[in-house]
Figure 1 (cartoon, helix red, strand yellow):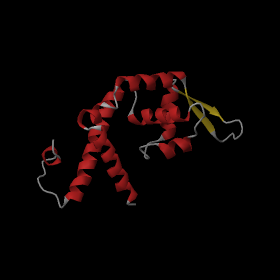
Figure 2 (cartoon, rainbow, N blue to C red; figure 1 turned 30 degrees about the horizontal axis):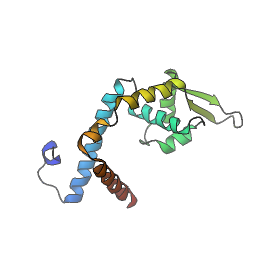
Figure 3 (spheres, one colour; figure 1 turned 90 degrees about the horizontal axis):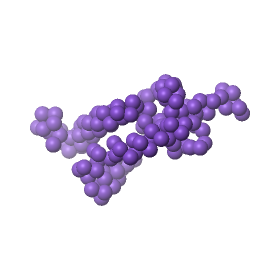
Figure 4 (cartoon, rainbow, N blue to C red; figure 1 turned 60 degrees about the vertical axis):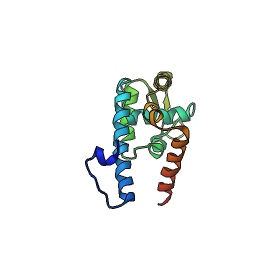
Length: 151
């Protein structure tokens, strides 16, 4: 459905304003779809994001600072998210022997298995795969990267 119809706004100042509003609206739409998909696995989107970062680091540990640096949502409280993941036995947290102020965070076998289960479910592919070809997804990625490069 067109953005004009979704938000009941027929006119925009220009195509740039329309694109930004469309991007914000679509981001919210995707986040809602992801939240519903992750609910089946008793995870939030930020928890999933941290698990993915840790899987990428595996078998090396990560620090909270590294997690914050790599998180998609920079406003999330990484320490609190790690607390919740530790309660679920999806990550471990161990004081670093070489620097007692640092804490090593690692994904557990249960965390890796959960990510495999999520990957196998196709939870992340459903939204984009249904409506965009591979070439269109590549073009969208290039345009989004170009938009951020303007900073």
